Image (cartoon, rainbow, N blue to C red; front, side, top):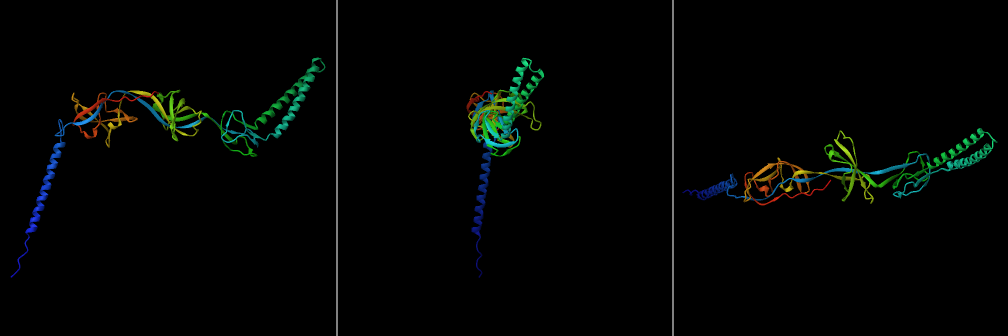
Length: 380
C-alpha cells in the first residue's frame, strides 16, 4: 500500500499571508501620497489645511549707501637714492654704519685724495705769490712807475692761480660722498681699500618720514577721485594698523591694457612702521550713493538660477499676505548687508526670516514688520 503524499497547505497559508502584507503596504503608500498631495497642494488662500506661515519682514526704504573702492597698492619712498662716487678713487675712509640715521651733508665715504691735496698746497702757494705780485705792481702803477700792461698781466696771473685753487678744491670735494638729505642708510656695498669707479653703488639713503602709496583704479571711478582726498591704507603684515594717506597725484592717462589709471597718495610715516616696497590695501571712500535699497545678506536666496528674494504682497491690516519670489540683482556688500541693484522697490515688504519655507502664493503672517535699519555712512 503506497504512502500518502505530503500536504502543501502550510505553504499555501504562508503565500496568502505574504499577499495580504503586500496589499496593506501598497494601500498605506497610496493613502500617504494622497494626504501629502492634499496638504501641499497650493490653493488660492495658501496651503490647504496648512494655515498661514509666520515670517519676519522689513519694509524697504531708500537710504544713503556708503561707497568705497578697494585696491592693492605698493609703498614707495618719497626720497630714495643710491649714493655713489662721482670720480674714480680708492676708498680711504668709511664713516657710517648700515642702518644709521644721518643728517644732510654728512660725509659718508672718503676716497684717497693725497695727490689732490699736494696739488692744492702748491696751487695755494702760487695763488699767494701772484696776489702779492699784483699788489706790488698795483702800487707802482698808481705812481706811474710801471705800465698798465704789466698791471693787467699780474691781475690775470692772480685770477688764474685763484681759479686753480678752486678747481682742486672741487676735485677734493668730489672725493667725498655726502648725504644729500636726512634719512636712513641701507646696507654697505663697499669695503675699505676698494677701488671705486664713477657711479659704482656705495650705499642707499632713504627718507622714511614720508612715503608714497601707488595704486590703480578703474577708469569709470576716476571722475569721483580728487587730489587732496583721504584714503585708508593698511598693511597685510600689520592688518590691525590703518593709516591715512592723502591723494597727491593722478595719472593723466588711462592704460590701454587694463583701462585703469595710477593714483599716488602720500603717507605720513614719522613713527617709521612702514617700509618702501610693502604691499598695502587701499580703501578710497567715495561720495555716498543716495536712494539705495540696502537689505540683510540673510534675506537673499541664492541658487543655480541666480539670486532672489521673497516679498509679502496684499498685506492686510491683520498682517496677512501672500508670498511672491522675485529675481534680484545684488550689488556691493556693506558689512552684513548688500545693496540691491535691481528687482526690489521702495515699500516692498521683504521677508528676512522664514523665506526658505515659503512658495509663491502661500499665505503668510508677518509677525515682525519693521522699517529697514539705516546703514551709517562714512564721509569721503
